[in-house]
Image 1: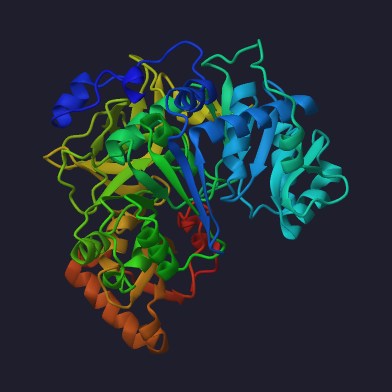
Image 2 (image 1 turned 45 degrees about the vertical axis):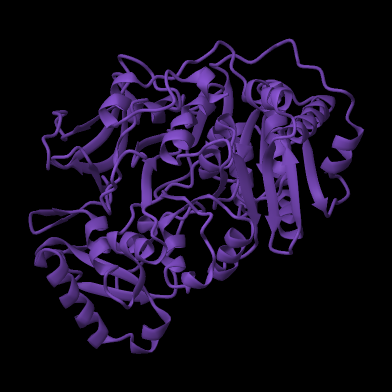
Length: 551
């Protein structure tokens, strides 16, 4: 299947990849028909989705099953009057109904808005008013339904509240019954085009209100690089990306690229993350490929991984935030597996990664994807030399990458602040070494300026993570009359060190950082906390830490 859409499936090295890779984009590509239905036609019994939950339930779905269920969902939405261009929000956690609903919406050309179950009334009102949402499909849980019901008076566009159960309140429609009673589905005549909007993500950014990122119907093809060349998936792979369906990481690891390649998606539907339970599930179901944010791996290496049989696990990837080298080395020592870091944004597919032919350098994002015309530039627009820090940008004057966002929905002014003169500015700072590997520094608004030095939070955090007391940490700058800014470390301590939280431990951590990295980078202020504020995608909200009263 994947061979239909790319120039070649194998490459010998990065130079070959950069020179010869290209994506072949057909006219009017639609993931529902061209991938899901095509697999159902040529290999109907091929396993597409393996779903298990923390209650011991286990259901497998073939591509034939996914086609039939998504056809029913498409027919049901059409029967309600939901059609091409209508906005539908999905709050479905990790329930398998998500895959039926989103593929069904793709088939009728509606705009899908994946959303987290943590939304409050205020969040729902903001989304409905910003995007004129016509329908919401959600898990039938009391808290979530209550937020939607309380938001309803301020959501004039919202016509349908649909529950997948178990609860279905008065005034709500039953999604399960809707699929059961749906008439046979016929593909609409007003077929989608590649330039139509397919997805809308309200980004859970580290600063400001959520932005509305929109992607077109060709976007799934951009994830061929994600699945085939970063995650190294094949038709016999069983891939687990640990992600809620409400954020873009699910599109990266639980849907598009995986099914284009023909891999089976493994879904672990759990309410609370417990490292031991996750390892047990990976052992029992013989997961072959695993992707998670750095936070997850930090907790996994503190478990007794050796007691689990993970011999089926062949490949591990990491994304969401930069990987601390200490975590890389600890995981490799325990499992023998190297963590293959990848980088991208909600606005893109994977743009920089460690690919299978590369030897990863711990802490490096890897090398650029040939799908993007990437550059690293200084503040005055000059391309950086090796070792010089700059902003990651993507040029689109020669071609527009498949997978790059269309802009921010209904906000051309905001789009213009980051995407102008055929250049998309990521706002992410990095540097390149002499071997062509890229190293993340931080968001341009996270970089700390202290006594004339520019200090990226990630390099200090990596030094802190090598101290045995530190489980997680965040580095921010706080105002200082003499130095401009000084470095503050907000730290989550390991359980064995919580009763030692005091000035002596702070001093020991400071001395440790002075030894591990340049002395001027040590944190002059240290605060111990129970947890760090994070976005739903697991990214640390440094802006929230900065806004707190400095201690």
